[in-house]
Length: 343
Image 1 (cartoon, rainbow, N blue to C red):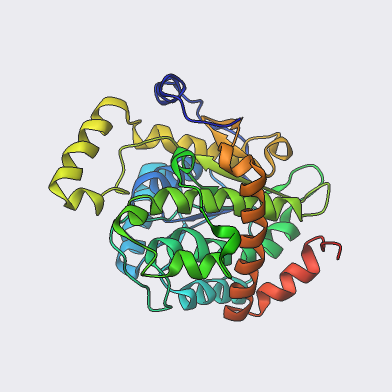
Image 2: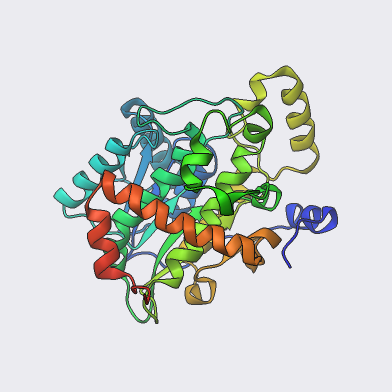
């Protein structure tokens, strides 16, 4: 069963990962959250391979221009598209997809990398706890709305890729004790009264677990052989800006920086895991799976348990209901492109 051991963790962290080199000259690629950290380094790697097109996103126009200039400068690629996308806002996700479709863009790869880590309970303008919306709900919405374009671009010889950046921290996510008695898992997770300081301390880990569950549920409903290989990727602990808000607390800052100094990968090294899942061959062998250090790895014990599978299935249906209300295209996509469950 999947679990996180100290020896196995350190061995992975200190492993030199291969640099992906697959041909992407006919591929159209999207990297979400490319202004800093893993997404930025992944964008540079992909741009160096000179894809047919590369679309990167950042939270606002200023960051878009800066990231575009830096990626083009470091890679030598020109003509990179850089668009704003704010995952704190469902309207921003919908607007991004509207623009994508209006421009007649295509996509062979979507790397959904953007994410946050915070210990504070705050709500987005849409009314959801921020980490939960950014890392899970908006990522799921974007993935589903882009799915038809990925399917259209996929071929029997080379499936398109949906890559959601998860984490080994999903192993540390607390069980959702009592979930079988909750009328709604999502409403409970989002409830401020439920989100005590101890729950918020574990919120990032939970969001990464939910991503693993989402990909498992989605992949199981894609027709076989799939035209889209969907996977979650663990980049390992890296030197990045993800912990910047957590580090605003002096105590956590000392702990996090000490930990990073001992075991963290360079951000560029971690980004290779994203690029590997996005472009390297044998993608259907990775379909529906959790990847770590560029290899298929076992999900957490909780994910694989009977209890975890039941939570995963309920979460899928609740997610579709919410996202279908936010954007009716979700309902159409689920109906047209996914295998329907038997009554």
